[in-house]
Length: 112
Image 1 (cartoon, rainbow, N blue to C red):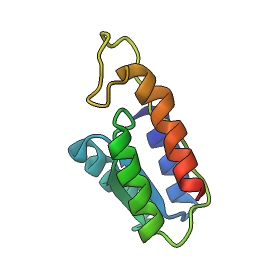
Image 2: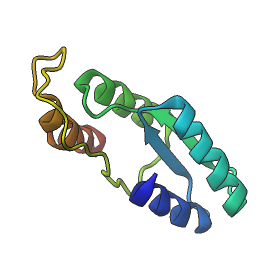
Image 3: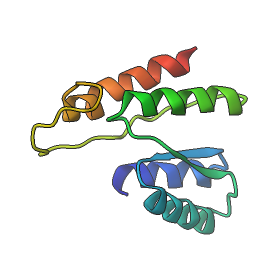
Image 4: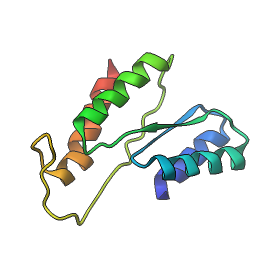
């Protein structure tokens, strides 16, 4: 939704292979179908990613590096605010992990 969906729509209109990295399979798949229908670009795909989980970030990066021949652009757009103080299973604060640590780790893993 929001800025991320608008950016994905624009990339798909430019005929780019576009990977939507989403926490929710249902919402992500709905966005993929909407973008494909609006742009006529069948190369819009969904991959699950929760930047609040470093294990999820590592799995996503591994899959992208294994399955994609190249990655030209990475747009880190995940973010949360106003959550109650929560510690993740990795013993990190949830908001900080989702907004900063996860995207930082993802970027560095994808740099190779």
